[in-house]
Image (tube, rainbow, N blue to C red):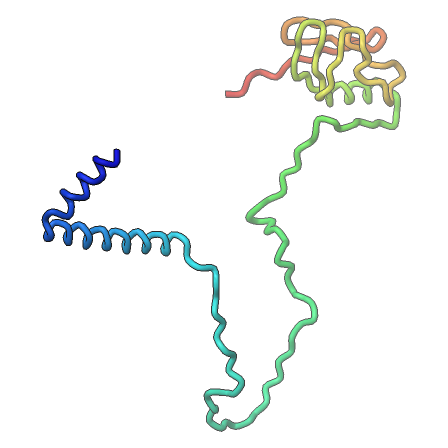
Length: 176
């Protein structure tokens, strides 16, 4: 390997014009390489300018009429309020809404069943208002004399019964 390096060095230095061109190109290449490094990683230092301690411009004399300026101690408008016209409030009910009715009549029971939404059916289980209920489980037991139980499951509907009264819930049709 040492002989190869000597041979390359002799070829390179044999012609003085070729060697001077090689050295010049090597020097320019190193300068460009150093410039890329400096541009890529600039130094992280900063020099602050001195602060002017005297007024640099003297204003021409004026009427010297004082104008009172009153500033509010609190902002007049809250900058964080949402514009009701641009962004109207949309109230959407949640899945865990509880229904409470004062009287224990059949009308309140029917209104309670109207508030139930069947979301899915799988085997012997159904999802009603975000809650998984199995066949025979109580769907709603509050504010009704007889608790509402899931008695039958079939296809896209379920039967909920309270004593002799039976109510059918169906899955809403697909929206396209």
